[in-house]
Length: 201
Picture (cartoon, rainbow, N blue to C red):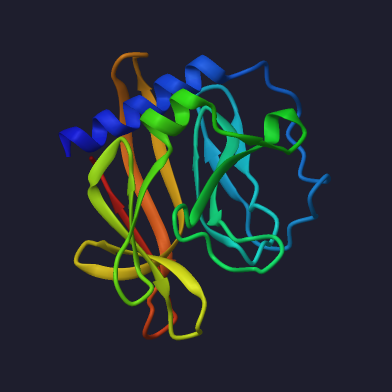
């Protein structure tokens, strides 16, 4: 858990290096979300986290204070053939809602030390996926019963098809933020029911 907290800190450190002055949050550029948006109270205001626009390639996404900028993890496929890239099957990028909802690639530091992934091909069309900053937490990219690729994770001894990660932060300092909890949301691959697991690192 200590290393997981270091992972969260690493993410925050990179964020502090890249945050720009916030503009009014809008999702109009993408869609008018019919799905539930996530609302989070902070010390100064209320953040409303938009649900990213529908995309068949999206695997999961990460959101956290102090802003609504969202990390998207999606399938990396060939534009011409639609085939999955066997070397780098997952592509990571930002939706920067504080800048009008534009997409932006990760910079070198973010990719190599915070939000990037190690990606290793296994057998039977499976891939071992791990955060570069927390390699002890394994994720598996593989096809589900629907024949489509999903990210599978084991959380609290339960398997889920991961869809969203939220990191709740309240106070603390620049060097040691107070991580209240990490919430992972997905679905049970057998029953299809929604699973939400929350824990304090």
